[in-house]
Length: 176
Image (cartoon, rainbow, N blue to C red; front, side, top):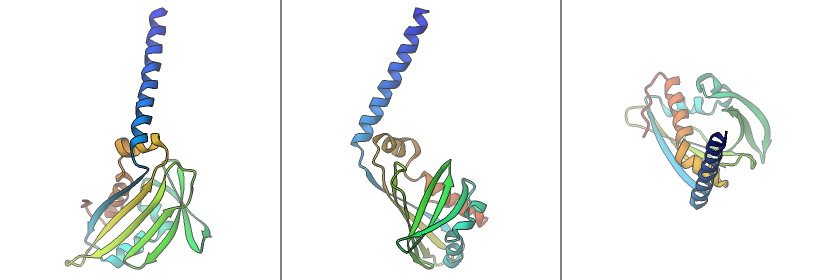
């Protein structure tokens, strides 16, 4: 019995030590980050724009998105709430310049993270386009900062979005 208690206390102590190290490392990481990825598609910018800005229908092609709900406007901007991985995230559309640029901001302060995504569509010479998404993120909590940087990666969500978008068009994702 004493040996089992020693093991249990050792495991608990190790978990506490790991938690402290994660917190300390996360405390030294910057709260703000910028991350960007580009997807090349054979579709015209106007075609991609129609899909990207049709928020209500995104769960039909983005398998990680459970639901989307239109909320009341905020500051004269449309707000849509997306549910992914059990989290409900309200997104306010700050800028919509068809078919070139879209900017959406997380419209909640209680999620442990925040920021915006800027979508830029650029035509390519072959009639397709490139979609560049730039995340200007903020992660105030040191534990979440550590997880965001070292476990999930700052670009994981945008890469999943881009893969789903390419698949929607029947294309193999070409992300860089």
